[in-house]
Image (cartoon, rainbow, N blue to C red; front, side, top):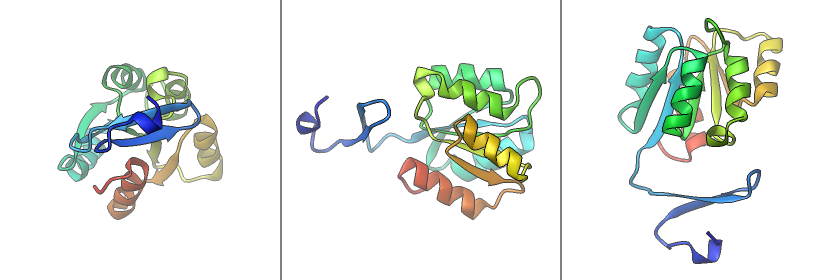
Length: 150
């Protein structure tokens, strides 16, 4: 779709990395994929975000890849420390998928050491947040990456 031909009431933005114009229905809730092996963390994140967003969840890296391909989330919150496949590898694989190539990914993890932060960004993470989660900071990051209020 050419920018000049887009409907005036749509919310469209150009993503230069993939050279595509994306138009979004402003009435549609943004979809967030929460990925964490801790059900407690998933519940806390979901409770904070579910009023204004559609939430889908996964508890392992392989499940996250499947859910992301099917659901095409607008944002992903991803833990690093998970069984089987860690968040770094999951992030790298998500970046290789067409459905999530440019989807913002916020790492939400207990790891705060410089090497973990560097590895997260090198794997394609868009942002980084450490646990315990500061919920005001999480809301700000979600809002910034989705371009909407939480």
